[in-house]
Each structure stands twice: as C-alpha cells, then as structure tokens.
Image (cartoon, rainbow, N blue to C red; front, side, top):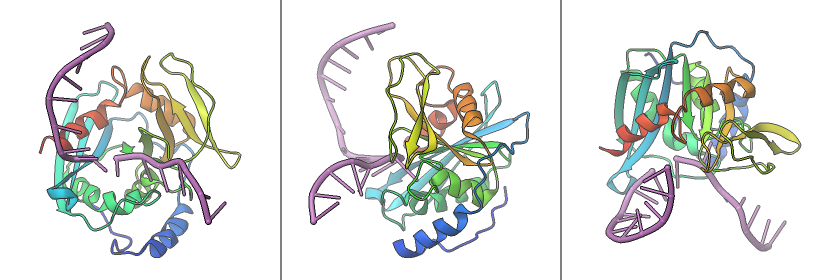
Length: 221
DNA sequence: GCGACAG
DNA sequence: ATCTTGTCGC
C-alpha cells in the first residue's frame, strides 16, 4: 500500500510532543470502519544488533476466519530511543516500511501498544491510524497510564480504564487465568467496537492471532 | 520533589 | 524490546 509521510522522524522530545498534540486533533474515536471487515492486520517489532536495527513485521489475516493472507518484514536503523509516551517515534518508521511493501490493504490494524490510553491521548495506535488513515486498535500487554477495578476471571470480562476521570480504554480478559490486555481506540473506532474485534481476533490465546503471527515474524529473524 | 513508566 | 534454563500445567 502507499504511504505518504506527514512529518520528519528526526525529532527531539519537545518536537515529538508538538506533533502528538497536533495530530491528536485528527483522532476519531467513533466507528468509521468499512464493514464487513475483510482483512485484519497485526504489526509487531523486533530488534537486532543490540537494538541498533529495528525490524517490523506485519501479518494480514482474513476476517473472521483469521487465515494468513499476506506477511511482510522490513528492517531499518533504529533512530529514536524507547521513552514511555513516545513509543511511536521509535517504531512507526519501520512499520510504515512494511506496510508500504504489502499488497493487501487492511480494513483494521491491531497495534502492539496503547491507543488513546496515553498521557496526551496519542499512543502508537492513534499515530499509525492517523498517518495511514485506517481504523486501528491499541492492544497492550501492560499498563501505561490509568486505573481500573479488579477483573473477573472469565474470558470476555472487562473493566473501564480511567485516567483523570475519563474512560480511555478497557482492561480485557481474553482468556481464563491469564493477565488481561489493555485495549483502547486508535483511530476510527469506538471502545466498545474495539473490544468486540479484539475478542473476535483472540479465539484461543491471550494475544490476538494477528499480533501472534506478526510476533513470530518479527522474532524468528 | 517522588514514583510510574506501552515496547 | 532483549538477555536466558528449567519448570509447572494442560
């Protein structure tokens, strides 16, 4: 698919904040998906050479049967450090490289990390969604910000993630007996719909099939 | 000022 | 994220 760069990636933290605040204004947390969803994609990152090389992987699956349709991988030098709240500036450059390589255009993308469950409501899922103008969901394995009540043990149980008396996402149990996932809207999707799709992409394991497959690609060279 | 802190 | 063996449980 074709990607159009909207800003430089050679930035200082100060400049990154300015970009986050500006692009946050373009984030849409209402459902604007093209349904029925035909292709769901998962993107994940890996690092090589002591972290100096970033490796992005993408897996496009059919929906709702979740069969792999296309995969891709891309490498590029790592140019931004990991700083909580600025993950997108470290990972998106390589992710755009892989998306540029694939033929199929995903109708929905599940990202590793937060959506609006972010200090400035602009996590990596929002950033990627706005840049490629495709619905995205933030699916994180751990908490960045926010508080929540305890979660029942059953699959499908969820609790709102609250930050500054605002609901920014949900803590979702995708499988009995495992740590929950942190789900939040990235772009062009509501929280309720995001939870629904995450569950439908997680039929067996803790993580969505999309990210599990992208994960293998990003890890196993 | 003191912790917390996606991957 | 990544470095790493064995071990517990289905």
